[in-house]
Length: 383
Image: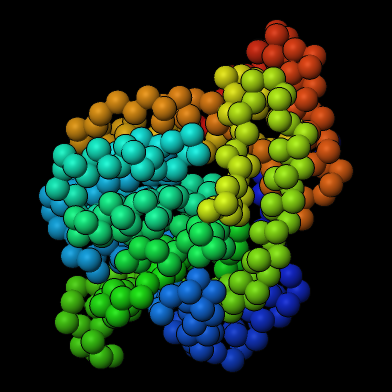
């Protein structure tokens, strides 16, 4: 049985040839391809600057350093995210305050407003989770009144739109990840900061390069967080295909939605409204039978994922912080399951996945003892 992967990064012959050309003709660090990639990405998002890094986590750390995040500063973010969203802030000594999400799985404007009224917040990090844009208009209205900085986590949302404007261009800065599972990659790991702030741009340039003022003069204690030239060259080519790939993801998502709406107890991803356009980094279902559905799909050759089984406020590393109950986030974490979506997902494979999910409910396969016996094996794969 051939396994259908959850995602599949695209590496073309052109990307391979470009990588070989850069290896033979450019400086491997700080080459011309890095500058070209940054210029192209800034133009794509619609910002003045883009600063590439070796990961999305590094991009967030450099952004928060640039705004002078200090020990004891309060940073508000959803707990419904990958742990890296909060790690950088906490490494700089900030105190995380977790905000509840809404039914669209992104930070709730209503809950955020309550938090901002009762806490002296320095920064808010909205997460465009699964490729779905946050309500940036409402958020900026709230934060501007209190001079609160917004740093967007767009790690999963390359090309997503809010009010016809690309995410990554709303906050004082934004970060993207190019990890191999993302909508576009750099043939490895990488990240980028987008901003209109010259201060953030200059700070990130220096701090990603060991605090370097000149070749052998360092006027700040910095990091080594550069993106190499080969990755940048691959990223520039991938960026040229990004909109096409995102359109393919939307078509796949539409087919899933048309065929799976009303099936069992499934709750499908939020639909795009007039203000938002998702890029479906992941296609995430919700069901109280999550573990058994995952088991059923797995034994039939379909990869699934859980993004994420443990929200950040429940992570062992974050128990030292004072966290309040997040009822919907906890429910979300126990019911979400991601099914395959990527630009080259074969239509036959998609039909196969749809039929498996439909059979699971129509034939009440979740009642089978054999399936329940294998549930633990599937769960162990998540840990």
